[in-house]
Amino acid sequence: MSTLVLCVDRSDDVRRKTGIDGPVVGYEAVEALVTTVGLADPEDSRVNSILESLRVASDLEESGEEAIVAVVSGSTEAIVSADRALARQIDELLADHDPDSAVVVIDSVEDERVVPIVESRVRVDSVDRVVVRQAHDIESTYYLLKQFLADEELRGTVLIPIGVTLLAFPILSVFFGTALAVATITATLGAFLLYKGLGVDEYLADLPGQARDAFYSGRVSIVTYVVAAGLALVGVFAGALGIAGTPAAGIIPVTMAFVYYSVPWLALAALSASTGRLFDELIRADELSGAYLNLPFGVIATGIVIRGFSAYFLQRSGAIAALSFPEIQVGALHLDAFPLTAEERLAVFVVVGVLVSLLGVRIASYFSGATLAEPEFVD
Image (cartoon, rainbow, N blue to C red; front, side, top):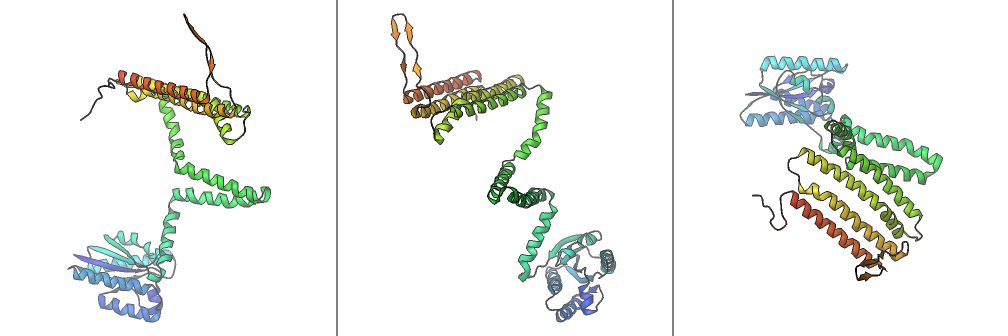
């Protein structure tokens, strides 16, 4: 098996500095060439690439393969002329030696563009890129930038936000001041990073297709999701009105007021969405999973507990009145109405929430064929 170790000089540095035309073939001829090039310009990185081609050829010879080392040069004229000169020299080498494969040795991005020319004529087993140690960081950075700029998605994700920021900052600074410009740009970049990091863009891209499939398949959940969105908006509006009517001041009472007045609507929204999903499963599946049956009860229980905790804070701060237990008259039994303290009110809501959750678990286990006393085990 014979291998052509090909050192590429696309810019024709070798001929310009030594006067030697390519191709230069043979270990001794290439060894003499590297000395001539090194004496002409010791700082030329081409010396390292020629030495690397000699090293690769020596390693192949030691492993028992036949290695033909050669240096081909391009042209100082146009790019087309340089590539044609290289192609002509490569054709001469292949006609004279008929190698089975080739190893291409390069030292720059410009030389790397010649690799497809070699691949079109002979099988290329390896591309050996030589980077001078002193310039390693510069070369590596250049290659990383080259790959980065070649990636269309990365360009759109990174360069466009940077460009918009550089354009928006001076405009905002002139009209609104530096502080507002920095705050606006920082908030916008933060929202963009969350948008990309949480995969919101992918979700929004898939949303039209999912909605179309839901409409065509006749899912009940598509309607209940719209109802849930409307109820959620009502809940946010009710929470905002609750904040406006809260007499107590402070971040905690205001936050608890929003939660207290919005949670019933938000719970109804979640209940609507979960009920639609439950109906979809009832229509599509022969056996209903207990998780879908338990979901509405879990939503109701969670809403009750959250409202109980928010009511506790509001009652302690004096923002809402105490909850009164109603008067009960059952035959001879008579129980007068009495107010509940904040702690008693919280306890009632927590107990009711737990009971609703247990009821949901019981109903779900009954209709799914499992029991609490006899759980199913799957081998």
